Length: 94
Figure 1 (cartoon, helix red, strand yellow):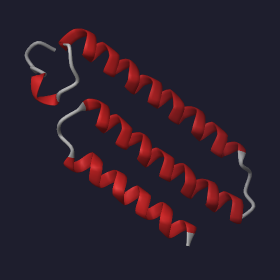
Figure 2 (figure 1 turned 60 degrees about the horizontal axis):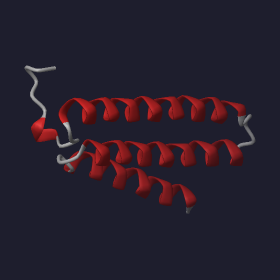
Figure 3 (figure 1 turned 60 degrees about the vertical axis):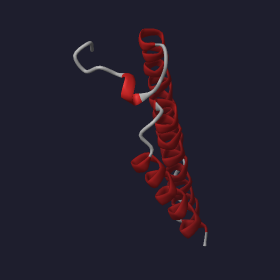
């Protein structure tokens, strides 16, 4: 039952990531939601199968680094362009 709920979370995160084209911040938040559902799936799998949970901590550390990198890109985009709308980015200026 918990796996099905985590799978539904993952699919909802993918749908939000796929169909939202307005803000860069919403895209980053949907990616973090996907990562949270993946963390939950892996944690449940390793907990029920009595594997070592240190691998989960290493993966969680890498996912936090990914989130910090996304936020730093968002801050640089806001400072450079003034907002986080996708349609205001010009590829030629990058």
